[in-house]
Image 1 (cartoon, rainbow, N blue to C red):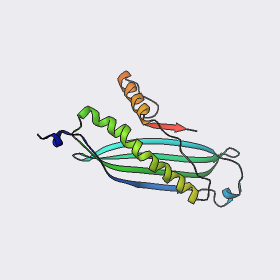
Image 2: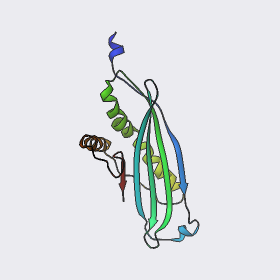
Image 3: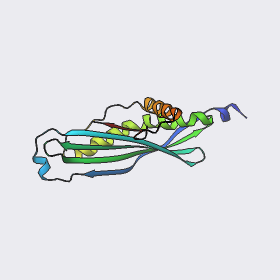
Length: 161
């Protein structure tokens, strides 16, 4: 084998929005409310092999804004930010961390922009998602698997208020 065949390969083939939805169930009356909403943020990641060295990674965010007054939903937006990655010449035990940490770290800024832009275009102030430590989420999941624990929700899913 030549040296170039043994070098690890990591290529971003494509980054795109796979699915995007916005709901404003109480429009137009909700636009008359002046109360600041409570924002609930849920995040999940998934990945699967597409073909050989080609992998699809999806980072999904669901953002719900509710008014505390009547527990009324102002808006709900869900986005599936997706990337197609070529990963080659990487030892088998190192592929999962690449798919669970590196790829979501690449996709997350695009997801933040998609969410913020969608909410703004819907007529609301932008929602800026805080950074996420995908490495910590990955290690937490591995620790739970090692301990044989079954978490209430998957370790690659987080919820913030």
